[in-house]
Image (cartoon, rainbow, N blue to C red; front, side):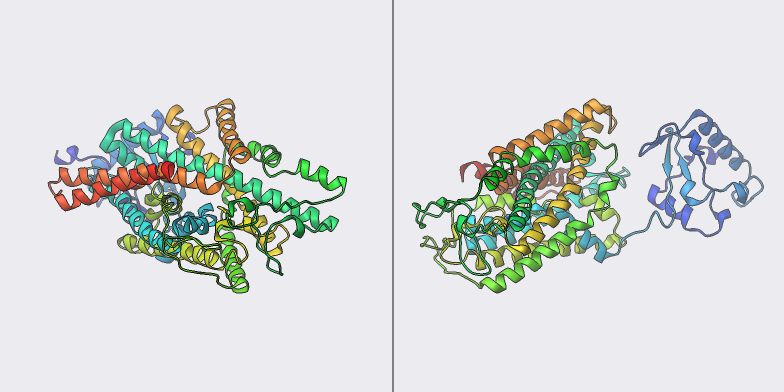
Length: 552
């Protein structure tokens, strides 16, 4: 009679149950409940089980009660025990959980986890780091980069530990929005979803602006090469084999603003320039290519090309190294006052760098998922710290080298663009290869971002990821429209990154992790005033970071 009160699945944790059931090589040591695929009513992340499968489960459990656990008389014979990939574990609540065997439960070693985090964080922000350092000043920019890396690392650590602070609940499959819902109800879940969408849509807008830029320069390079057009006289920049340019020389207060560059080309070149414009036409051409891709029901095809992100970042690092070696370093240290060619070491525009870095170090909404696949869970904190160190070193390397070596005199440091590739002429072969790589990579990643936006928003509102073609199409039109408008009227990726980074970072980086940690400590009676003051300071820094984008 005592056994009758025991739950059918026992009190063992789900992850331990799966491991115990699938790691044994002896099929008789495995007594799973098998649900035939035809009995799975709905093919989703957590499938519903039909009444037929439920009845079968009840009979299996009933027969198992008739004999002792050591008696194999009524145990399922070997030939009916399915392979691991076909095993489901039935829950009395009416759900069936897929049980993964050793292959499906394979974990990554620490080195793979570290580089997975590095690859995920390395995005378009790396192109704006030199511009951000210029806005803050060289010395102050390096200090801020290091401090922001440490702050975002700590907040990411708090997100990673947030599921562990919830007692008496199995949080093994929880994500950060589930934690927010636990503490703040539906309001917390919706707020985390909203700010997560801000980061995703902001990234999609930046991608659209950059794809317009890269497609324009790639087409310009091909056209000029085929027609032997020399653009050196139409671009304000330096001479020599490694030219650097100032696309908008009026931003240089010490340059000769009376300089007007004219290019006298034939009529065909004028027609090409009219129909191949970075802001007037290219953003609209991309609609023909990308809008149909966003409407695919699945994004698995595009996920195969994610390795291109790693290739692009490695190529950028090589490109920066070569350019810095050829251009040399051009630095002068003036602490608070600018000179003809150089900016001061400390500038009041530093919040623009903090906004960029908030998005550059942002991985908080998916860090729990990434760390679940780490083989040695006890090394999660160490691996997360090493990943942030690797990301910070990469940002420092690119930002410091580009700022120190470029622009070379007679151009001022003020000529540094939010996308540092714009400071190289369209005829530069090395940069042409980089733009082509990045264009193809972003073309494949953009539908993935759109898929994430759709899954999060549609899943929350309608309960399914693809409610209808009309719903998905209208959502994609809104997202694409935002990218087209920004590429047409405000193609400044530095400002777009810093505004979206500071906005989503306010909630997901600074406020929610800190507040959740303080609530957990208070409920356990462990909250002390130093911890409360420190985490309150983090919240104030997040608010100041967002406000600074509008006043600096």
